[in-house]
Length: 169
Image (cartoon, rainbow, N blue to C red; front, top):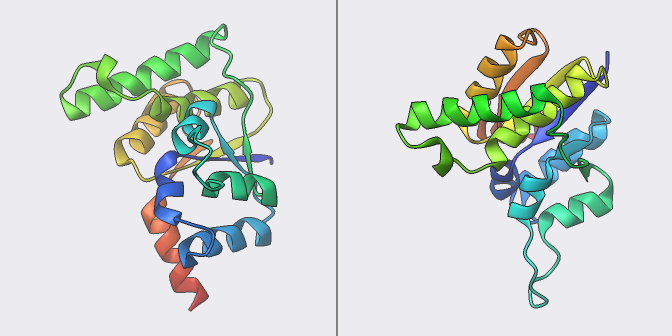
């Protein structure tokens, strides 16, 4: 079975800088378990800034260390990718009682990347690490409606980091 581990912006914000124990715990997890976290392009864009005065962002340090990578662009010409992206956007909007066009596009991109990789047979299971509960629940619900209920797991990013820190002590 091949697995895909997708991470969101919130996970990296919660991890902090490379000197932080939370960052180090996630890095150890990735290395011990031979996991490479994959970021949709939209997530990577949220985590980086184009400012020469800013040091290397933590996400770039993780990429340089080899335990994070950025996914190729989403294939919106694949119907499932667009359906899942729209479905998660609607799920979040309905749960938050706000217009769908006000939902940031990085959250639905997590599930769209999962759908693209599952539907192409590249992977058989996907773990989505997010600190946004609605994004995680939406990904599980929408991907289940596409027939992937046994292939998708939402991992609460805050709980994941806390468990890693507890296990290390």
